[in-house]
Length: 416
Ligand SMILES: Cc1cc2nc3c(=O)[nH]c(=O)nc-3n(C[C@H](O)[C@H](O)[C@H](O)COP(=O)(O)O)c2cc1C
Image (cartoon, rainbow, N blue to C red; front, side):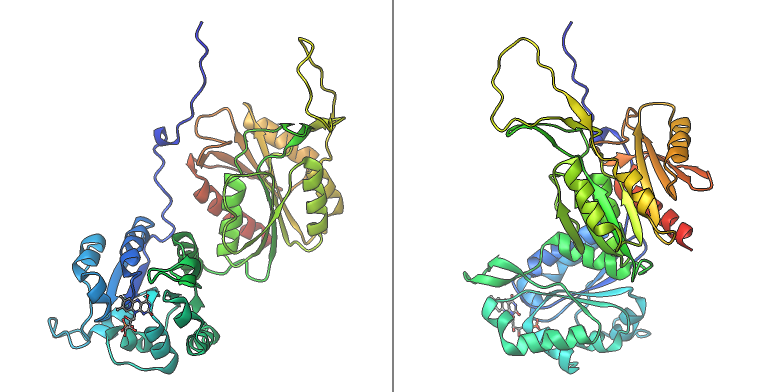
C-alpha cells in the first residue's frame, strides 16, 4: 500500500481574511520622493485590509508617479489642488479632513516634515495637515544625510511631541546609491502602525505575557523532540495585544516567524528554558496567556556527542517536564488573569471542562487539532472558549488573527 502523507493546505479552507481596517477611511498624503512608487503598492494593501484609501499628492509627488496610478489602484479620485472648484459645495481640504479616520504621510519628504512642524500651509497636503484633528502618521523616506540632518531630526521631534506617530525609516541602500538610514519603512511596520493607531487602546497600562510556539528537547547536539506548533496563534495574540496598547512580552520557543512589532521577544528552546523565562516575567504581568505547545516529556540524558547508528532499536528514557501552567496557578495573584490552552484530539468539550477542573484558569482556549484547519501549523483555527464560570463559546473556523481578536475581547470582558 502506498504511503500517504496528509497534506494540510490552507488554501483549501475558504475562510475570508479578517479585515483589520474594515470601514476605516485613510487619507494617504504622498509627497515627492522616490518612495512614492512604494506608496502606490501600500495603498492597495491598505485597501485589501478593508480600508478606503483617498490619496492626496503634492505637486512634486506627481512628478514621480501619476495620480492615475493611485486612482486606478484605490478606485478613488486623487486630490492635489487646494483650489479645485469642480464641486462648488466642497472646499477640498475641509471636506477631506472631515472624512478621514487617519492621515498617513506615505512617503513623507524632509520638506513636508518641515512644513508640518512649522505650520506652513502652501499646498493641499500641508493645508490638510492643519485642517485635520485626527491621528497622523508620518513615514519619512529620504537620503541618509537629509534624514540625519539636525533640521530633520528637530522637525521629527516636534511632530512626535505633538502626538503624531513616526514610522522611522529603515537602514540599507537608498535609491541615491548611499547606505544608511533613509529607506521607507517596510510594509509590516507601516501596517502595524496604522492598525495600532486605529485600534482603541483598551490594554494600555497593562503588561501582557504570552508564550508561543513549540519547545525542543535535545537528544544530542543535532537531534531533538518537538511538535508541530508553528507559533502562529501565540504570535497573533501578542500582535493583537500590542495593537491594543498592551506592553507585551512574548516568550517563544523556536519559531520561523518574526516577532510582531511593538512586542518584546524572549527566545527559549526547551520546556525548562521556557519555564524559567515565564517564572522571571510572571510577577510583572497583569495578563498571562499560555499558548505555547510545551513538551510534556524530555530525555533524561542529552548526549554531548552525536549518537551513532547502532542497534536495530533504540530506547530513549524520558522524564516529565515542569508543568508551566500549574506553576503559574500556584503563584498567581488574584489580580492576574490567566489564559490556558489545550490541544486535544476529539471529545473537546468534555476534555476542556476536565482540564479547567484540574487547572482553574480564567479562560481556557481549547482546540481539536485533528480537525481540518484547526490547530498546528495552519493559518486558521476553530476554538472553544470556556471561562472560569464554565460559559462555553464555540467559535467557527476563523483566521488566527481573528481568533486572537475574539480571545482578547473575552479577556477584556473578564477583566472588567
Ligand atoms: C530624483 C529625486 C528624488 C528625491 N527623493 C527624495 C526623497 O526620497 N525624500 C525627500 O525628502 N526628498 C526627495 N527629493 C527632493 C524633493 O523632491 C524636494 O525636496 C521637493 O521640494 C519635495 O516637495 P514636496 O514635499 O512638496 O513633495 C528628491 C528629488 C529628486 C529630484
